[in-house]
Length: 126
View 1 (cartoon, one colour):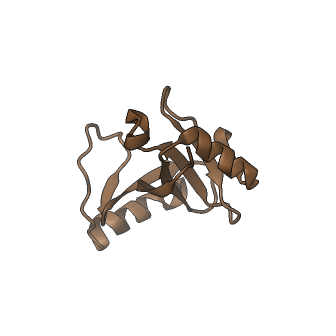
View 2: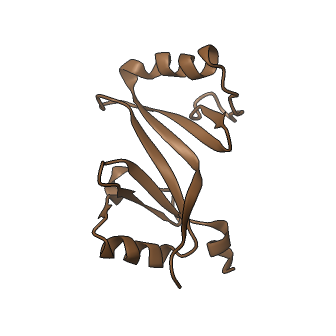
């Protein structure tokens, strides 16, 4: 099967601790993007960003904000092979993924991190 890539639903903004509260205030209070409900106060704040979800992650130890994007594919194995054949840098060590989550991390040539994840259609075998 040939891998097909599509934009995913998630955008993660990795924010240095020293800028986190001001950034959260900007999205929550200044431009007032709708915030999605959290089960616990310690859960990562999420905002409805058009048809996407914007996650605001507090990341100690980084010096500047980063944007991470999600790409979904119908065939994760074919996607991994396709990206490797094109010498795309895989960087699974960047952040652990939940056990059993069908995905991996890559970096674009400009070092934008992308989560490549199995689409629901690919999971069900359709």
